[in-house]
Image (tube, rainbow, N blue to C red; front, side, top):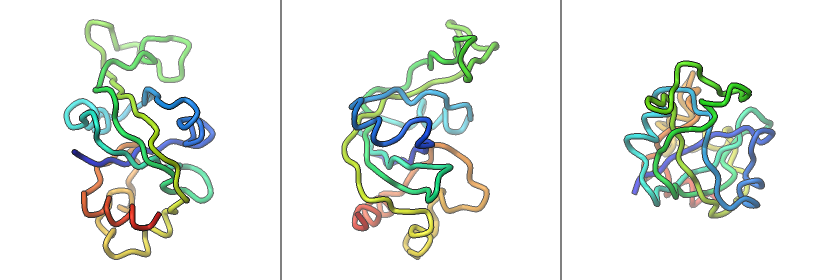
Length: 149
């Protein structure tokens, strides 16, 4: 099993929406490295920290799991969608998504709080300039953060 952190702006899709929906397709990823994580490394059962970004304060707000392997992101084919990609075709899709399932909501572990723990200093989310919406989490970091809930 692998561990991941997936960012979402709460105004776009929040942990509460995932709790209500139970599962969701993680669409709209338009970064090749994040897409490749989904395509090449994510497996069913992998755990996910659900992270609220672009809000005050940002941080880890819940836990989910990957419940469906990568498949073509339908938003790339819809000309009315913000994530439309005119270069993508059904025969050669460029963008993928996985499905995730809600596990639990936890207290917010803010970005500032994460920075206060030396054991987490190498987390990608804490790296200067990190903008990836999906990043791997080391198993030791995962266990440490679970202890903060």
